[in-house]
Structures are given as structure tokens and as C-alpha cells.
Image (cartoon, rainbow, N blue to C red; front, side, top):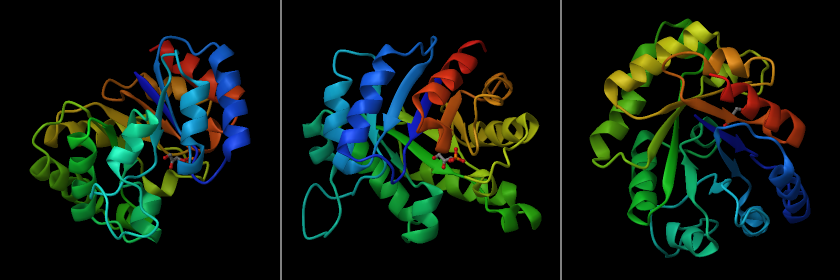
Length: 236
Ligand code: 13P
């Protein structure tokens, strides 16, 4: 069971260090724990969490090792910082920054080539679900990854229905289970659930047979609520 906290564009260096020092002291149960700070706070997080089991991952990575790509960060740069992995293909990147199934695969391959673990995100929007397209969207997104990535040892998929992200509208455990089973039928890797995971719904989601953890946004920004989610998920 893996619980990853995606901080999105929250917590600069000072706050990140403070959070990680508090996280070191917290009771996190028995799950594997990863935090994903913004780029500028990665070094502070790596330092504050050194000699612990808690991993630090980035929120994105470019596919080239270096080059004229203003504003981008490469896998070797992340490795040099001591970062353990990266999120790829988050719906916010697909929605606002032109990420496609194609670029997601390129980023996954580059990350893995340099020894980074990857959490690759998939999930349908509200209108896709309403139109009855959930299955075809998941098949397309996961299918692209299955086709493009041969070695999936260091790969985890996060199923994050876009309508559940930051809305407080969590997928029911049944909806999550159904989607996770579909993902696994296409690509046999662990699948995290993401979308309004909170201390009071973490246990029932984690109890589903094909839910292997959670990718937590808002509720990962507070040490107490993040630690509670970790402990709740530990019971299943
Ligand atoms: P929330 O937990 O804030 O809904 O965000 C989920 C998410 O996007 C994690 O990557």
C-alpha cells in the first residue's frame, strides 16, 4: 500500500522543510509514504527526510536529458537531487499544459531510463463520464502506456477521475474498484486512487481489492490529515 502526497503548487522551501520534519515524527502506520513537493522544494524535502523510509518524488519530468527546453527539468537533474521518482501525466498537466498520451509515454520512458519510479495518472473528466466514455478513456490512456512502456517494474498508475479532484466528490469505493480492475486488465501494475481522498474515506477506498494506495492532493498538505490517511490505509 502506497500513500503519495501531491502538493501541487503549494509549499516553498521553508514550509516544505517544516512539513517534512514534522512528518518524520508522525505515526504513519505501515504503508509506504511518498511526498511530491514543487521542484524548488525538492532538495529541502530530500534533506529533511534523509535516513527515513519516506520517499520524495517530483510532479513532472521532461523527456530529454538536457537541451533548449525553457522551464523544464530533466530526469538526471532529479536524480542528482536524490529524488526517488516522479508523477507523470497528472490531469492538471493534461488540462492546462498540453500533456498528451504521447508525451506521457515519453516522460515515463525518460524517467525510468534514469532509475526514477513513476506514478502515471489517468482518469476521465465529468463530461466523459456523463457521456458514458469512462471505459474508452481509460482504455486509451492506459493502453498508450502499455504499448509504449515495456518494463513496468517501477511503474504505478494513479486512477484520478477528474471530476473528483479538488471537488470533495470522491468516487465511491465501487466506482474506484471498477476502474482499477479495468486498468489492471490492460496493464498489470499497482493502482492508486486519487480524487478527494480524506481521513474519513481513506479506509473504505483502501479496502477495495484493486486499490493499492492513494494519491492525495489537498489532504496531504496538513501533516495531521496526511498521517491519518496513512494510518487509515494501513488497516486494509
Ligand atoms: P485532491 O485530493 O485535492 O482532490 O487532489 C487529488 C489529486 O489530484 C492528486 O494528484
